[in-house]
Image 1 (cartoon, rainbow, N blue to C red):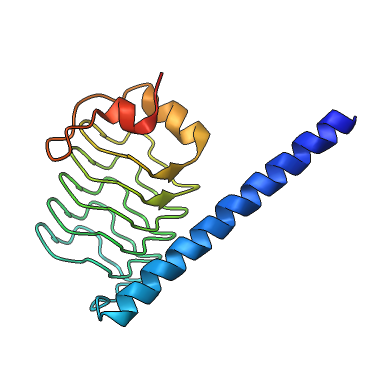
Image 2 (cartoon, rainbow, N blue to C red):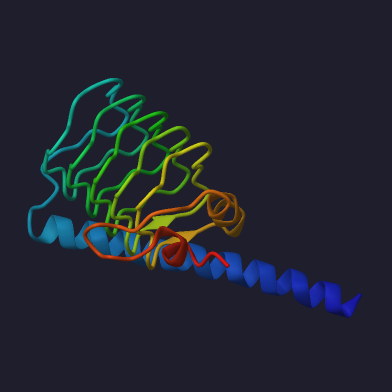
Length: 173
């Protein structure tokens, strides 16, 4: 019974720690973006279904709760963006830069993240069901263990920019 309780406390502390890290990183991203004027576009709660943002510079933008189903973000710079609660179902993110993005509770089901840079991002409670992740680099990204286990089932390829294997970036065995 004592061991079970200590395990519960560890889980609670671990969850609290991840939440605290997410808040600090999100605050740092938001503060940095505001401080140097990087938030130039606000797509919060926007309907972006099937829109084309290929190659666009959206660094520091907010796409929180945006509905971007089947939108094209291929080659777009989405670094330091806020994607929380966004819906990117079947979106095309081939070669997109999602470095240091905050993507809590985002749907990437069926999305194409081939060769994407998803480095040092926070992607907790985010879903990648049937997503294409070949060549994507997830180095330093905080992901749920369950999601990592699912992605490791089919992770493959090497990112052409960083040279990091997708499986290695996810910590697959």
